[in-house]
Length: 139
Image (cartoon, rainbow, N blue to C red; front, side, top):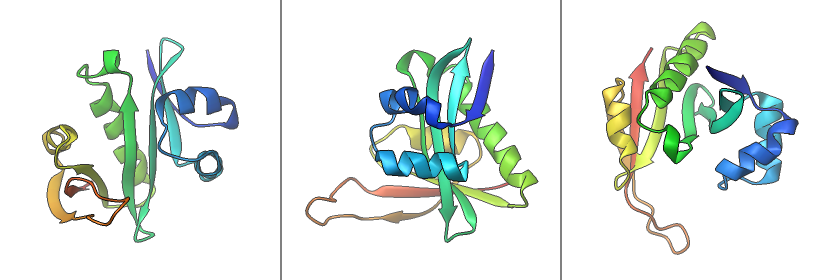
């Protein structure tokens, strides 16, 4: 059975086994602001999800990460739908995310109704990466 629970400090070990892109300080911030979730299946942590507010007003997915063996099974779609429902209940009418142009996640987001809305080029030393695609969905 799939469960999506707001992250707690007790989830730290599970979290950092899956998400190495944020600091411990930022993890604590996600816990305190309730903007991080641990995804559980059959009582085992299988993924993490975190977001913030773009322009301090539009919910923006920063990361959804599932263990390799849990991908392509509909879990990501289910997590996104539950999160979108929660954001709509909070009064938001749109959600956003981004992904690099060389990542397959862009196809996942488009399949679940997100549409391209812009891009970002980071070519500074130490920050250079492929084109970042921004996507948006009305909820």
